[in-house]
Amino acid sequence: MQKLLLLGDEAIAQAAIDAGISGIYAYPGTPSTEITEYVQNSKEAQEKGIRSSWSANEKTAMETALGMSYAGKRSMVCMKHVGLNVAADGFINSAITGVNGGMIIVAADDPSMHSSQNEQDSRFYGKFALVPILEPSNQQEAYDMVHYGYEISEKYKIPVLLRITTRLAHSRAGVMPQEKKAQNELKLPSNLTQFVLLPAIARRQYKDLLNNQSNFIKESEESNNNKYFDGADKKRGIIACGLAYNYLMENYPDRKVPNPVLKISQYPLPRKMVEKICNECEEIMVLEDGYPMIEELIKGFLSRGIVVKGRLDGTIPRDGELNPNIVARALGMEDTRGNDIPSLVAPRPPSLCAGCPHIDSYLDLNAVLEDLTKGRVFADIGCYTLGALPPYNSINSTVDMGASITMAKGAADAGLVPSVAVIGDSTFTHSGITGLLDAVNDKSPITVFILDNATTAMTGGQLSSATGKIEDICAGIGVEKEHIHILNPLKKHHEENMKIIKKELDFNGVSVIIPRRECIQTIGKIKK
Image (cartoon, rainbow, N blue to C red):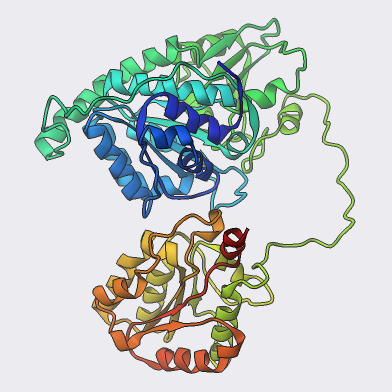
C-alpha cells in the first residue's frame, strides 16, 4: 500500500475509515477538529456512506455514537479534553452498558493550553471509567491503534479511549495503512437489556466490568504498545508515556538510551512491567505529557521506597507540555534550549478580525453600559472571548461552554442588575439553551446577547446547529416575543441598536438580543 503523509488527526480519521466505521460524531474543538473534517472531506467516506455531520455538543455526539454501536456498527466520537467533561455522563455509563459494535472515544488533550481553558489529562477519565486507554507516541501508532482499539472494543464489548495531545494531533509523518475492512452488518445486542441501566442490571454489569479489569491488564502486558528496553545503567529507569517517548528519543539520535526504558502506550498500567523496571533500578524518572498520573500510581503500589521523579517533585515542570529540552534537563543532559530570540517587533496578541460583526456588537453594548458600574457582562467560549482584551474590555468572565447565561442569572439572583450574558450562536445550541430556560422559569432580570455569525467560527467555520433557529428556540422556551430582537451590527445602526439594548437592560425579566451578521472569514471563503 502507498504510504500517506498525515497529521495525527488525519491518521486517526483514515484509520477509522479503513477499520470499517459507519459513523463519526463530534463537536468541533481544537485540537480534535481535523479528525471529523478529514472524514467529511473524504471521497472514500462519502462513497461508503459514513455519517460525519457535526453534533450539537459532545454529549449528543457520545450518545449517538453509542446508539450506532448498539446497532452493531463501528463508531467513533471525537472531542477535545474539555469536551469530555460535557460527554462524561454517557462516557462513564457506557463502560457499564458496554458496546455492541466497536466504539472508540478520541480525546485530544491540550497541554500548555494553546487554545483551551485548562490542560486536564483525559487518562484520568479513562481510569475513572475503568476502560482501556490507548496513547500513541507517533502518527503510525495513532493509525494502528485505531484498528487495534476496535478489535479490543469488540472482543470485550467495551468502549476504548484513545488519548492524544496537541503536538501529535497537528504534526505530520508518514503512515503505512493497513488492509481495509468492510463495515459491520446491522446486528442488535444478543441481550436486549444490556443498555438498560436499571439498578439491578447496572449492578450486575458493573461486576462484569470489574471482573474484566484483569483481562485489560493482561492485554496491556502482552500488547506491543507497551515495550521494555533494557539498558546497562541501572541507576535510573525511565518510564515514558505516549508522545513523551518521542521527546526522550530525540535526545538520543542513535536511538540508544543507556538506561532501561519502559514505553507505555496502553492502559491499565502494565503492572508487571512497571515492577520489573522498579526492581532493577535505583530510581525512576517518569515522563508523561499531562498530569502526573503514572507517577502517582507508581508511588501508590510500590512495595519498596524507590525514588520516583517527575512532575510531582519538580524535576519536570508541573504545568505545560513536554519538549525534548525539558526532558534533557531532567536527565542531567546538556541544556540545548539556547538563548531567547530577541524581540524584533512588538508583541501582537490575538484580536478580532477586521470587519468582524462582534466588534460593532461590543461597541454598541459598551456605549449603553457606560453609565453603569463595570463587571456585569458574562461571556462564553468563542471568537467573541477576545472582547475581554483592549480596546473593548467588554466582558468579565469566560469559564466553560454555556456558562455566560447561567452566571449572569446567578449574578442577577445576587442583586447585580442588570446582568448581561454574551454567547455565540453555536455555543448557544451547544450548552446555552438550558440556562436560558432556567432564567425564563425564574423571570431573571438578565439580557442575553446571542452573537449570530452563522458559523462555528473559532474552530474554522464549521456549520452551526443554531443557523435559522435561534429566535424560534428562544420563543419556544418562553422568552416573550416582544423581548426578542434582531440587530444588524453595523456602525450605521449604532444609535438604533443602543436604544433597543438600553430598553431591554431596563426590562425586569429575560430579554434576548441577537446581533446577526455573517462571519467575515466565512464570507471570504464563500467568495474564494
